[in-house]
Amino acid sequence: MPYDYEGFKKEILRLTKIDLNAYKEKQMKRRIDTLIAKSGAKGYEEYVKLINSDKQRFEEFVNYLTINVSEFYRNPEQWRILDQQIIPELIQKFGKNLKIWSAACSTGDEPYSLVMALSRHLPLNQIHIYATDIDKQVIAKAQVGLYVEKSIAAVPDDLKKKYFTKVGPSYQISNEIKSRVEFKQHNLLLDTYPQQVHMIVCRNVLIYFTDEAKDEVFRKFYLSLAAKGVLFIGSTEQIIDHKSIGFERKGSFFYEK
Image 1 (cartoon, rainbow, N blue to C red):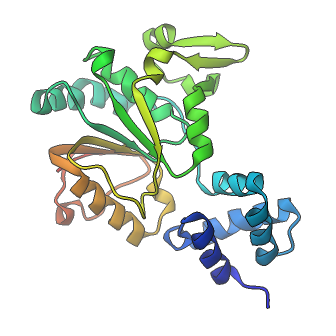
Image 2 (image 1 turned 60 degrees about the horizontal axis):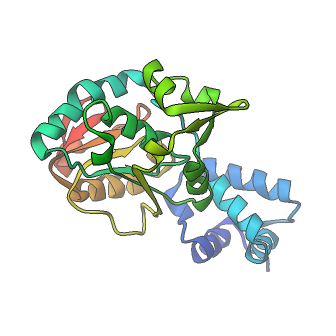
């Protein structure tokens, strides 16, 4: 008997280690049904067989599942607060060897933005960003470092001029910036978190998670941070019960342990 969406979720967890129960069901099911229809597969069971036997289809599925909408300096006013207030405070508290994690980093726009923001305060050779994502394909794109004009629109002009080279219609980020980021595959719901982190940046990703999954991730971020470390989240998100976790609100989108 062909299995339903519940059976499909179990198979996907077995195959990809991605737990679809952690995502808002209506939204995710609609995305998956669209992809299955496009693939020509007749239902969930046939689609699972397809991705099980075809590596390219499998990677396409994971890429489609993990929502990758990203751009440099997204919400510039928040990056101004980061530049003028948060980074100087972090350097004052923890010194110049900051341990910074860009979680769910997508195509690299965010960790590279972090390197550029930090470059206003520290020499490049002292900057190291640990960047992770569940999707191998977007990590591969991030490591190439080629972006469309729209992606880099909010980058301050001096940094754009200094660190990007026009290649046809696209823009290539410099090796100086790329070399300061270490990319790794990581599942926020399953894998171990780094410890004693001075700042975690995870923006506009958890909106797709259920409230329970969100709460679990925020609590894990709290444990991952060093005392007085900072979590920087997106403008579409909020930590509803931040005090019960142990966070103190530093501004609209910055929380301190």
